[in-house]
Image (cartoon, rainbow, N blue to C red; front, side):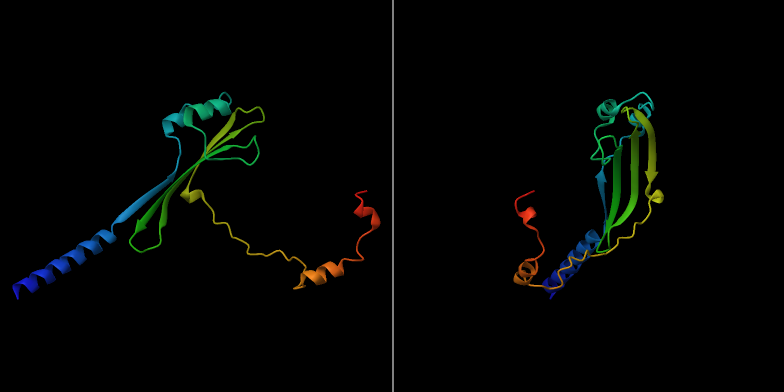
Length: 152
């Protein structure tokens, strides 16, 4: 009887240990933001794209156009058990440049500065309205001119 009691205790202890480990908080860091000392070395109006990239590194995200800014983003997420992960910290450093490529401004934003952007779930209508391929081809027979066939 004592062997069975010991195994039951061991099983219970193992389950309790497993449950406690499963509920420990885990943190995930994603992204890169230069430290404050490196950002302090960037001089507005003097440094260029190349000197910024050399001193703090190239960002993973930049502006859409070639003359866009550099954006450094770091996010810290907390995972706790089976709960949904929660973003607990976000830091964004935006370095903008003028048309000559010199630093115009350095701005820092945090999670509190962020705004939720609503996503529009619109679908573009293709105008076909469930026509078969054959119906589409036959429907276009009279919709062209001979000049469009020869390219001019």
